[in-house]
Image (cartoon, rainbow, N blue to C red; front, side, top):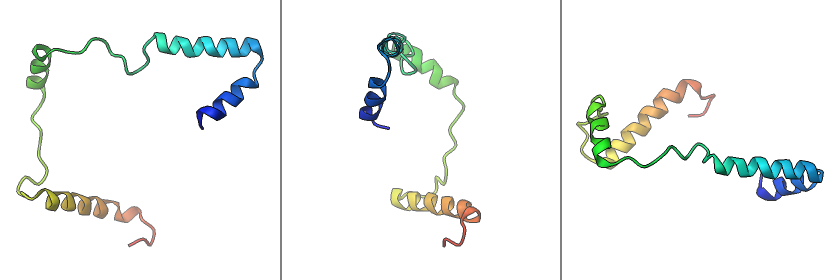
Length: 89
């Protein structure tokens, strides 16, 4: 759905309903929505978080060539999804 479609639907509302819709939209901006999580963390705060994380397990660390590594991962994914495909080989 595009903004144009949404606008056309909003125009079909009564003036009272449009006013309520506008208020609800403005309220979503004032609360910050999901992307606003507070102030950015400093390096001093980030380092302890990183140190507390468990170690990362690398997949196929023996493959040095990045292109070969990506191709290997793609092939593994294809192999894993093969049972779900229907006659597509």
